Amino acid sequence: MKPGKPADRSVGTMKEPHLTPDEIVLWAEGLLPAVRALHLAQCAECFVPAERERVLFVQLSRLEHLAPSRGFAERVMERVRIPTPSGGHERR
Amino acid sequence: MVACAKRGDEDAFRELLRRYERPVFALLYRMVRDRAQAEDLAQETFVKILNGIRSYRPEFKFSSWVFKIANNAAIDHLRRRGLDTISLHGAPDATTPERIAATTLQLPDRRETPLEELEARELGSAIERAIGRLRPEYRSCILLRHVEGHSYEEIADMLELPLGTVKTYIHRARNELRVYLEDRFDETRQAGGS
Image 1 (cartoon, rainbow over the protein chains, first blue to last red):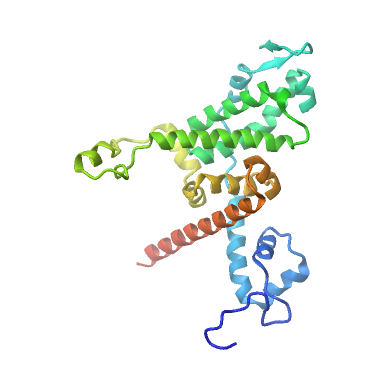
Image 2 (cartoon, rainbow over the protein chains, first blue to last red):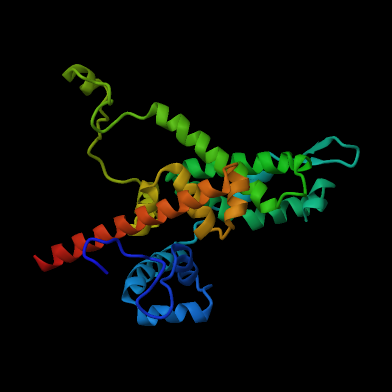
C-alpha cells in the first residue's frame, strides 16, 4: 500500500476479509459464525476493536438488577379498575 | 395471560405486574436516575397499562407495548424536568452577574439521605454513570437493546423511530460509553501510577 492511501477495511492482509462493524457486534454478542470468528485470531486490526466491544457488552450484561420498593404491586393494584364481562369496570 | 386480563381476571393482572415490575422500574430508574420519581412513573405506567388493557392490540408484542408506555413516561418526565432545571453554572442566556446568580443552583452542604445513599450505590458504578451521561434517546435505545434484550425492530416499533435511526443511536451510544469508560480507566491508571 502506498503511504497516505487509506486502508481498505474490506480486505484483510490474510486470506479472510476484515470483520465489518456489524460482524464485530455479532462477535461481541457471541453470534458470529465460527468461520468468521477465526479471522480474529490472525488479525490484530480487527481483534482490538472487537475486544473493546466485548468488554463493553460484558459490563452492560452485569448491570445490577433493580427492583421497586416493597408493596409496589399493591400500590398499583389499589388504583387499577378490573374490567367486568359487561364492559364496565369494577373498582377494587 | 393478556387475554385473561382483558376478561377481568385479577390474577392475570397481578401476574402481568409481577412479570414486568422489575424491568419497567429498572428502565425508568436508569432513565430518570431518581428512585422515588422512577417509582412514581412506574406506578403511573402500570395503572395506564392495566386500566387500558382492552386497548392493547395483539398484533403488537405485549412487552413492546409495555416498554413503549414506560419509555414515553420517562421522556415526558425528562422534558418537564429539563424545563425546570436550574444550572450549576447559571442559565445559558445569563449575561449579567445578577442573572447568573439568580439562575445558579445553590447546593447546600449536607449529608446524603438514606435514599440518596441507596441511589449512589445502585447507580454509582462507572457503567451506570456512563449510561446516565447519554442523551435520553440514546439511553432508551441502549437499555432496551442491551439490558432488556429487545431486537432493533422491536425498539424501532416502541420508540416510533426508523430502524436505521435506532441502529445509529445504539452505535453512537456504545461509542460514547466506550470512550467514557476508557477515559475513566486511563484516569485511574494515571492516578495509581503518580
